[in-house]
Amino acid sequence: MSANASHLLAEVQGEIAKACTIARREPSEVTLIAISKTHDADAIAPLLDAGHRVFGENRVQEAQGKWPQLKQRYEGVELHLVGQLQSNKADDAVALFDCIHSLDRPSLVKALAKAMEKAGRRIPCFIQVNIGDEEQKGGCAIADVPALVEQAREADIPLAGLMCVPPLGIEPAPFFALLDKLARDDGLTGLSMGMSGDYPTAIMLGATHVRVGTALFGERG
Image (cartoon, rainbow, N blue to C red; front, side, top):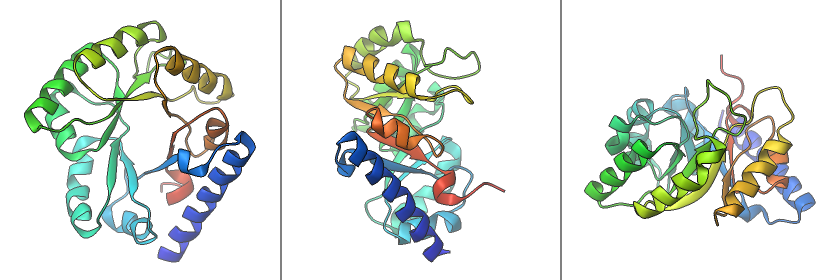
């Protein structure tokens, strides 16, 4: 399995490098987040053995069940929360994660600011934007982005940038371009966008963080 993990990791890194070449960017400008949700510690370990250290999880509770032990075994792990976050889980999220990609409402700004104050650590956060205006998806409305950015800054939450998940089955490029514009309008440089099916496109449109699961772990059974 470890050889397979190394092979898949090298393939994705190669695709990132290729997209960066086309976009005249450096591969070092793009952080690859391996999305390990639903995978247990045994499935994650081969990627850690292959040298990868940046991982993403969807749920606080699931991450609590596997990452404290993995972090003890492997040095330098950086853990990102990429799924929706309930305000009552803010303390747990701040304790375990190194970055949060789903800040999307004023009540969560308050909860995270309070949790960070209590823990004595400031966690960089991406503001999640509902870029396709989809009812079933998390993220703040496009029109609400400037106000939420302002609230987060006033609460002393370090802003890493903006995050989005474009609508399924539609060409993602216009949504990535829009997120880039929104970020620049608010003086933000980080763009968390692009997943297994579209990360090369995201990189060509400015992604600084790509969230890749299937291409690294294979299809979930």
